[in-house]
Length: 427
Image (cartoon, rainbow, N blue to C red; front, side, top):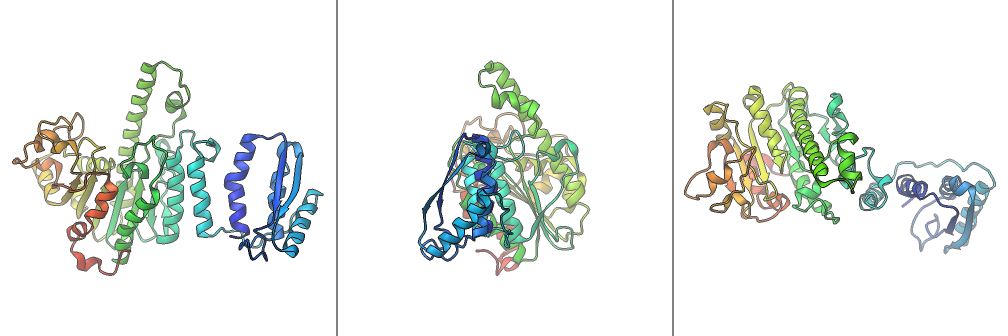
C-alpha cells in the first residue's frame, strides 16, 4: 500500500465520516509504521502523503488538532515523516504526490469498507438520497468490470430514468460491432444470492466470480457484452422519503407509498429495457444476440418480446434463471399471436429453482400479475407448461440463482451453441 491507497481511503471514508461526525477536537495518533523504508510496516507511504493527510484534517474542529507521536520502526522514516507533518501544521503546503491512482486491491478494500459502513454512516452511500449498500456494490463492480473486461458506462439519455440507472448499464467497447452480443439483465447482488435485502451480510465476492465465469467465456469466444444491473429503488426523493425517513407515519400511508414506489420502479425498469433495445442493441451490427436474465429482470426481457416485434426477429435465444423469491414466471401476453409463444418455447431456456412454488401440487404460488397462471400450468407434473412461459426446466438446486448459475454452466454452453464455441474461456 502506498500514497494513492492511503489518500483514496482518506477521501472516500475518513473525511466524509469526519465531517459528518463534526468533532470538537481531533487527536492524531501519529504512528509512522506504514512509512516508506519501514520494513516491519511493509508499506510505502511517503512523508508528503502523511503531510497531505494531516492537511485534510486541519479544517476540522475549528483547527483544534493534536498530533501525538505514536510509533514506527525506522528512525529515518519517522523523522522525515514527522518533519513533513510538522511543517504542514506550521502552514507550509505539502509536497506534491507523484502517484495518485490507487492499486486495484487498495481501491477494492476501501470500496468494501464503504459498503459495510454506509448503514452506519449514510454519507458513505452513493449520491442518490434513496441509495443503499447496493449502490456501493455496483460502483465497486463497475470499477472491476472496467478494469477486467474493458467495459464502459452507457449513458441513458432519458431524463425520467437517468438518475435511477447511473452506473447500472455497462458494455464492452465493441458492443456495436459485427460480433455476437451477450446481454445480461440481472438483479442487485444480495438478491442474486437469495438473501433478504434486510440481511446485512453480503456474499458479493462469490456472486462476482459466478457471473465473471460467463463474462470471461463470452469475451474469449469473441463476444461483446452489455451488462445491466436493475436496482430495487428509484431516484425520487418525493416518492421514497416517507417510506425511508418517517418511521412514525401511519402504516396505511407507508403501505401506499411502498406501492407507489414499486409501481414507479416497475415502470422505470420496463422503460429502460425498451430504451436499451431501441438505442443500444437493435441498431448495432451484432451477428447474433443472446439475452440472459437473472432474477426479476427476466421480466424486462420478456417485456421487450411482448412490446417490440423486431425483438424476436433479431434475437438468437433467451436464457433465464429464477429462484423461489420470484413467485411468478414472465410470459407471453394473451394478446400476442400463437407464433410468438411458439418462438419463445423453441428459443428459450428457463431454469426455475427446485423449491419454487410452481412445482408444488395445488400451489397458488403463481399469484397474480405476469405469469400468474404458471402454478396451475405446472402443478400437475404430467402436464407440460404452456408455451407462453418458454422452455421451462426444473433445476436440482433449491436456493438462490447464484448456485443455479454454477450448477447449469455446461447446459448453458450447450444451449448457446455447444462447448466447442466456448473452448479456452472461463476460470
